[in-house]
Figure 1 (tube, rainbow, N blue to C red):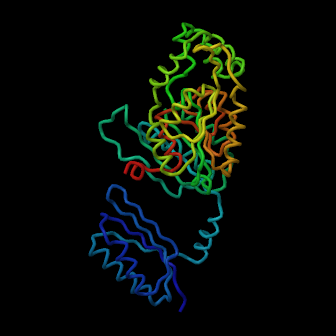
Figure 2: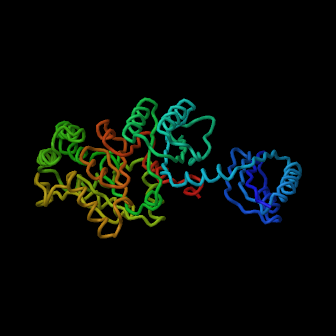
Figure 3: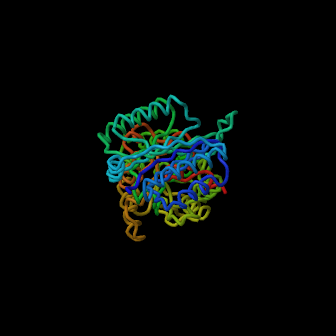
Length: 405
């Protein structure tokens, strides 16, 4: 006799052995598993098994035994016949594009999730699954350490990516959350190189401002720095002006600044995980090699490219050596490192905060504007503004349960 396709849906208190018991019954009748999914939400089981029987005569016996077993385990079961036509429609949907939306913030509210999911639905994208990547939040939130991240797996033919990105950028600013939208492909799951800006990205300060304060020209240099980071003046021009103002500063000041660099929140956790996973790490900075090399030793970084200050008789001359590492040069260096390491650009991550980081952010497969100015966020692929650098791990799909073991 003809076979049947049946969907079993089981729910109730989770306990060891449920899946083994149900599949044991199906195996007894030589049923074929066509699809299976299981989730545990706060110890509540949701198990779905789509299977095909060898013949219709087996269906009654299978359903009876599954029903008895579920009753014995105090579980609820539901059985749904599935037509061949309906199953074939499901199979046909497998070729549609897949995407990942990651929501990251101190907390995630129902309103925030509602707005995001409405935007997704408006683009004809269906949510296949939702996963929490962070641990369960404490009821009494600590603003210093609290974070919540959920990942939505989507499928469908995207109507208008530009429109969806603009909507997410708007919600991010209004609601105080970070929203990442990525294509779910082999590159997302296999990033191999990450390139960081240094100042205000890996560290919490602009080193040139620190040096300027010691030289007594802090206000002048800081004003030029801010203007450059906003993209109002050319980076190379601003760099020359700022370095010139450092003329006469003693070299020993640089050592003192390096030994007291304020490391960005989440940087140590991020670097530890990246090294464990074998990822290559580079600093591509418009700052100075002296400080980049200090971080290289601290975090075992593979590459450092930055600007070299000219020093004569133990004092800064107000000049620099070699070409300026500006936005264009950062992108060139990213491409060069990827070629040397034989890494596809789609497998590269770039992270920075300033306008001079945009060329490398837009060249990399995953470009992240980190605590950046509005202009930079608006022109980058992704952004993080709510937590520290380790938020990058969630954009890569890492879960706290794995990385904090």
